[in-house]
Length: 530
Ligand code: TNX
Image (cartoon, rainbow, N blue to C red; front, side, top):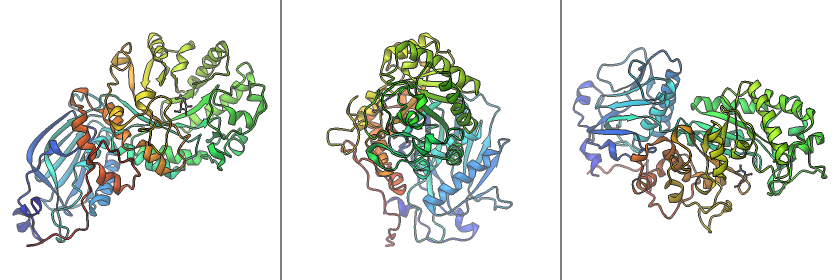
């Protein structure tokens, strides 16, 4: 019983009864928040979240009320009560969650927020709706799984009081999903967005094309998906996103304040495109759809103007439905492209990407070309390429395969995954420092961290979740939280307490034996009234 009885009020309906509530003393610094916030100060009381609670927003950003509705929906999902957002009326004394857009103070960052929780109010201050959205994830994590009394007419979910001041260490916190080796549906991608957003990720990179499949409709080149999208690794039916599907993903990501980065991998990894339109091919070898997992055997013909005319259409069509600032050109493992052809190709494609208003990103090999300092290199394998990128003035995204690849097996017993770079158990995934991983890259040249999930060995959402969780939760903390606040032993305990969320979301996470997983409380249990 413990805590539950301290403030158990089985029923009340009038103001008088509510005043008598003795809220429990809860320590906000022990609430298993991930990513761990910059600063948490407990005040050892708790906020009364109940069916009288409302959410009030104040600020110019019209998306603030949307963020408030998002929170109301999530409270409803978790607790079964839905606070009204900006209701016309309300009783004084009812608990209030107050969102205030605050531009007056100097915030460390556009995503910074402050949460001040007392017995009757929860105040979320933020410079933007985006920052408020990050703060909302903290609120969601603070709401207990069960109320004080499930049988009461008006149960209370006591939320630990105190203040949280928080801002991200990196403004770019991403994961990549390979929908080319195996196709994943719009619904699968949306669920991945739901899970990532809860841990404050803000970037979803979609690897849309590869040797085994072309997954995005290009209206001016329909065979890309008709032919190139028709299969996948293992010979299953494949699939593709229509432009409407892609827009739906982008809109859903935007509701979660996440940027979608589309990747069209080239000049290698292009077999599916070349089978669809053979003039693109630069190998001269017989072309056929590929369902295996080898890499490095395909290339575009980098010396044909028609190839660039084709790419102009592809980049134009995708850019037109991508509100984010980036376009990823891949550029990795082009083992069948001669080096000077590769450099020529990247130089030319960079111009096309810029023509459509996007910043080019490429895997670290692109640093070998004459890239513009505004373009970005994604370090995955070769620290020398990453260092070259920095010497050219470029920024770098850190995705070191030995630490950050979600498709690496946890250990030799893992059901899915590869191990060419390493085995990456949950602790190895967490215990490294992005700021010093490549000594020659200073912090101000690091855009952020991204954890790629390649899909050669996974073909459905459960297998996706097995590889991504729990490791993605660690990458969230590595990219959001300050180094001085990160600690494996402390994280291990907080991670163990993610089970209620993961189980509520029906996530098929890998139950690593290195974590003492906590059994979630049963929501429907009867309160013993003795
Ligand atoms: C390397 S990482 C690749 C991918 C594979 C991955 C498998 C990168 C830029 N290229 O083509 O899917 O390894 O781990």
